[in-house]
Length: 139
Image 1 (cartoon, rainbow, N blue to C red):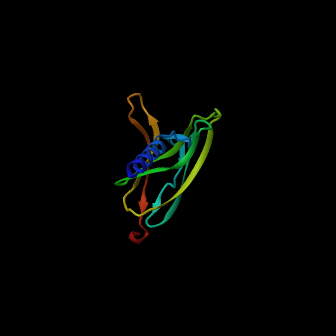
Image 2 (cartoon, rainbow, N blue to C red):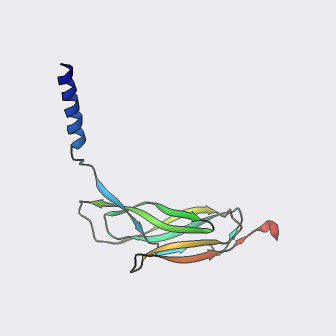
Image 3 (cartoon, rainbow, N blue to C red):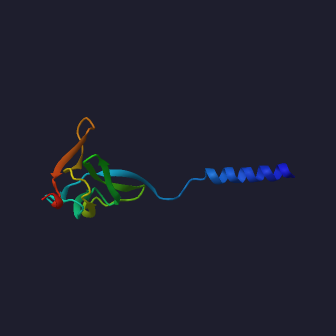
């Protein structure tokens, strides 16, 4: 009896784990920054709004998050999107904006590297914007 119960329980778990998931199918994709609005300079320890514009290629692309990677004095910026699969999509491109805040916490100049896509050799292309930082206590 115990063996039959064990076999029944095991087969139920096996079948339940092997069923196709009818949930949404999607994948993530990084989108380029079309343009950015960044102050021409920062004052140390002040907070600034930075706005980036990006384009969703079609109706299956959706904003997921800001890709923001910190490397020493550089900040790499792009858009993380998720793309629905197996659904009909509109072909309309949609331009959007995203604003985030940055506190100028380093005394060195900031280098923003806005991701612009890949070249023919699948190497990243960046637009670089240097923002100097002033320290009012040093004036």
